[in-house]
Image (cartoon, rainbow, N blue to C red; front, side, top):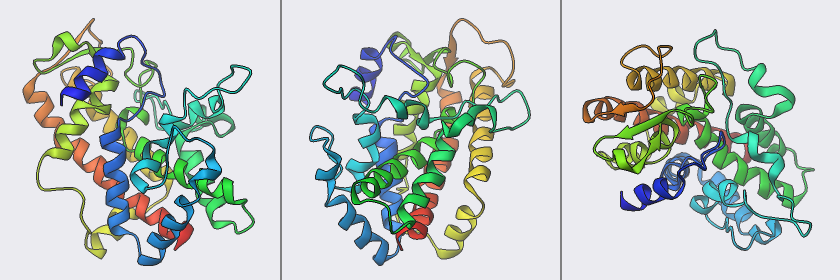
Length: 283
């Protein structure tokens, strides 16, 4: 917990719409997926990630599925020789700010494919296409592993024109002085508490459960995560997700405990659905 609190303090004032779903969340989604894919898919993942040198990102390794799960965040600050951001084009691919106080509609949030759900579908298509160049296949795999995690962080899937809760200052339990915002709470300390609450989320799930959770399309999953963002805002704002936002939201212990199951379920869904997509793309 200490490292997440320190990270939150260090990032004060630096939050953005594409702020990372911190390592623990992404790595857990990836581990759940790896535990639930077929042996053939596992072999294909290992074979592709063994070619991580093609990425030319030595400071951001992607040799394991856990490393690949955070690669898309690690590369954000990388620069080209002219000083421009090497992967700046991908910043908006990590989220989709769909208004929670209006009927669900991905169109405004996904103009020209600049949203997480569009990129998930695109990465699957690239991996399935045998003509995709080897480097592009490795990139698509690393992005896919990361983006399915992002989609299942509710505040990457819905917002109130506040950058996915980044503009909503919030206290987390007794850690008010850490000066979180609502987005960073769901990225970090809440995700850590959810994942570390037993039983472990990382296990092989029964076939019927995988089929039930993996049913539907990426758009269906987007709607479901968007609905979870309603729960996140409602809990933070005293029951009304579209109510008045105070100068500072107070996430007390009771509210946090209420949101832990929501976070756990989203992470579990993310892992099982990533497994489905990996099997579809590589299996």
